Amino acid sequence: MPGKFDGGALPPSPKDRAVLVTGASSGLGRACALHLARVGFPVFAGVRKEADGKELADAAPASRLTPVLVDVTNEESVTGAAARVADATGDRGLWGLVNNAGVCVSAPLECVTPERLRWQLETNVVGQLTVTRAFLPALRRAGGRIVNVTSGLGSVALPYLGAYASAQFAKEALSDVLRRELHPSGVHVSVVQPGAIMTPIWGKVGDVGRAALENVPERVADVYRVPFNRFLHQNEEQARRSRTRPEDFARTVTKALMTARPRTRYRVGADARNASVLARVLPDVVLDRYLRAIAS
Image (cartoon, rainbow, N blue to C red):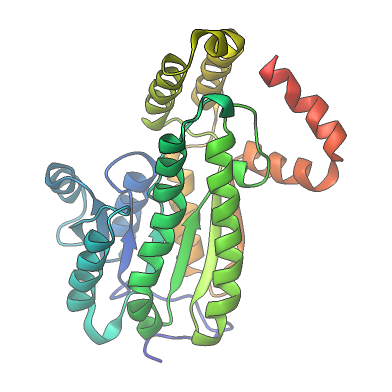
């Protein structure tokens, strides 16, 4: 299989090993796409708007980053993007797929409409699998790697982040199954779990959450308004105080793509590591007592 290497060999050189990053127009995806281009990977940056793609290409090293228009919730868009990347990479195939595109619905579950839940799952779960399926032929040609981006909420489900955590838990399950099913064909699957990192997503999270409360009966909104607004404020403040930066995430993804023996999971930030430990060691009753304070 072209491009495939023995797990005991030296890490691969980035040269001629193309990588696609979805959700690359802003935040973690943008930082990741630019970092990969700077270390030498030919990068296909998945964006939804041409203007975002042009801005990204201008910020990258010359000729190392190619914007690709793709909407992960639209199968026709994904299929078209896969065809364009396949034409560009030819027999070399695609070395890396970084499934980063996603949205975050933060609201009390009683206030999450079926439409909002479908948007959350269609983007973060169904969209991720749609992209993976479309790009698998190119990944097999290269004996390449998939990096699925989840979060610390793939280990512990917090109050007011139930829809988002549901998507993250589902992505963790998809990643486990893909890792086992794709191993015989030489495609490795890793998960990267970033914790709180200050990016533009936090403003969007607050907007979506407040809109959710505005679209339920007042008697329901009154139950949650004070603690939920406090939660949004504290969550954003935690991200502002976090020492973890988008560059830390980008370096971790690079490690998963370059190391000779990639791990199944990489956790970025102390909060993501702590969430994993708490989920493993604390009984539900103790964890519930600790987390109930968020909703009070």
